[in-house]
Image (cartoon, rainbow, N blue to C red; front, side, top):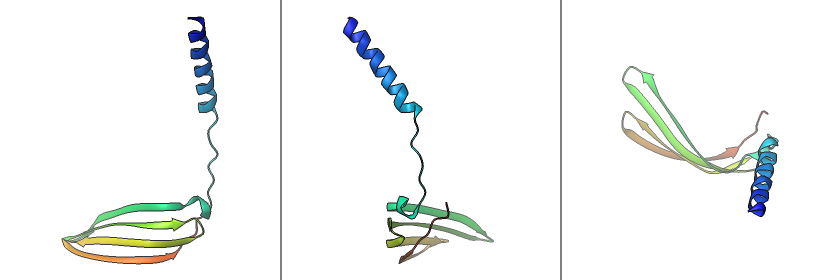
Length: 90
């Protein structure tokens, strides 16, 4: 029983130590790496309703690849793709 209490106390001490030290956030071009999705939709005025969904891959070096999007404008669907560069203002 005593070892169980000791183990429990050690666990809570370790857990409180881990949660009390947050990781430092780093913002740089390298921090944007991986595949991301996005959505943008809004009422454009009049009878125009537009929504866009897509995804892209950021390489962590400032380059975008495999970008694609699908847009619906009042139900008319269009698609496209893109590549490019990015920079972060941190």
